[in-house]
Length: 396
Image (cartoon, rainbow, N blue to C red; front, side):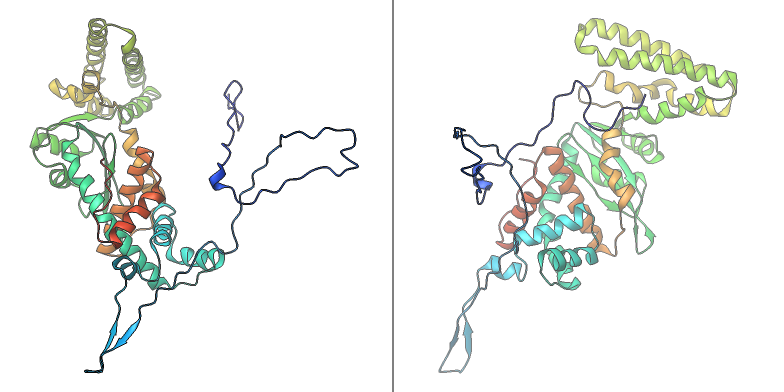
């Protein structure tokens, strides 16, 4: 039955960790009056309630002044130079630029919504054109970390892949998602073909790609000899549909396969409790039983189409996770990584918007994957960019 909302019985209580002394401003003590405290002994102990609130003006304005000098010989005015970082940042400093990038990239908030937030909450009047410039500076700051991650994909032992279709001025585009163990990359391309896989993972990719059964991944495997782990979740969904079919032959076939699949995954989950030889014997026995069942499909098109995926050596593309450590049987993690784009993408308007989305989505997903603070990485990247220093790495 459906559980009630909130903490469940038997689960440990979740309590907020108090803020440390460095985060606390004024301390306001409250005591009983003399009359109320009569007959009581005051203790050096306090019941503490920490309350967090915004300050009246949550920003500081620094005015940088460059002195002017007159050259009496030529009458020319010479101005002392600003520091490189100050001149590069302009009106909006690195932390405030990071806030705009966070709002636009992780919100995702429109330019109008960010403009209203800055005006009404922060008390900072700003034009849309200024916000656009701020985010383009952020996109430039994120270029190096993005390129580093994209280049590192070809060295990964396992990469999950998926794609979704946003648009650019109404024209279709494809956002690809490549998820490795410690980072995620989002390239945007007009094509949904295997040529994108060849360009990004290269034609000599020597490890395993996890994906659904979409034709681009099958062609990439056939053309380049790449090892593939096809997603069981997609296949199980199709089998469950047949297991509930009104045709008894389809329903019986689907139910039999689901029984073997449950046995297969139960054995896989308990692999650590068995010796390697014992697990191998159980795996081979269940795999043979499953393949015998799937290859004796009813003479219906729905079943024959699914059974074709397990012809001959093609079946290896579903069972690779059983023998290769680090390989997932489903593509769920990659699909979760790209889910926010499927649900709430606003599309793009030109190449600059596409590059911005690629980079900010990649950095946000990778920071979350590694347990880093997204906003802090934004600040570090913008500071490095304004100072013309090397961008921080997400691989170290």
